[in-house]
Length: 91
Length: 217
Image (spheres, each protein chain N blue to C red):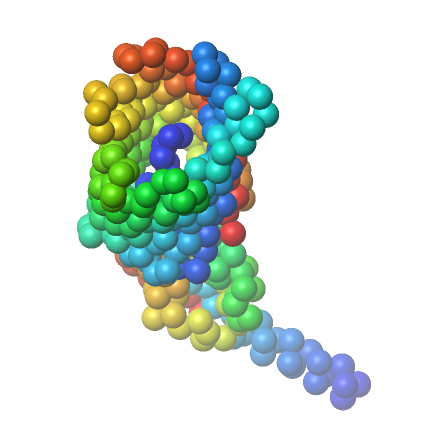
């Protein structure tokens, strides 16, 4: 009983720390751009999922906890050769 | 990116592209096979390397000269519909035979991408040393995405582009060979296959077929 309670508490606390970050990204032009961002953020340990929209110029991340930070996300986008414009975080 | 040129390609930091291109001349019955590699040093700095091999009808092979170019993006303006970029090119050509001499090369590349089309313009001048003559080239490439007309909301879709180019090739002692290129590019997430026909508009008026594939890593 105690074990089940502990596991449930840990699970719920993990879910509670999930955050969604949406970034407007300018400069993406092709399928490689999308693949590039998906690979780059997909490698990060704390990133649960990555979605990129070439149509709407958006990157959406679901992360565990507060990493990567907004600054780390922006720098990764710059390193990929694009411009991060607006960041929206939802916890 | 254009069919006949490699230097407009955006390369992300730490990433690279390997490209293989075969240029078959119907009239001379010769192939020129070019292996090329691009690497991203930083968001604004990239390196491009190329090595051509000429194959004659007799089966004889001749290794061409090794080319290295550095590209520095001087200007980049991204927007919601695309991007405009201007880069400087500089590098050298190293001969693979003691019978040939080296050269220095410099030029520029401009890219404008807007919604479904892209225009790339590049020009390169090679200053030959010792007995090597000077040479130059330019490429004006227009690419238009014909499929899909509307991109998916999320993720990657395969893309098909038409390509139309005006190209010029000049060797010291000759006038410039003007060429027209028309082809298609099929782009998937990790690789591209593209091909087209090249018609020389003056000089020998030869016809070529170029076929290329590239992989991104």
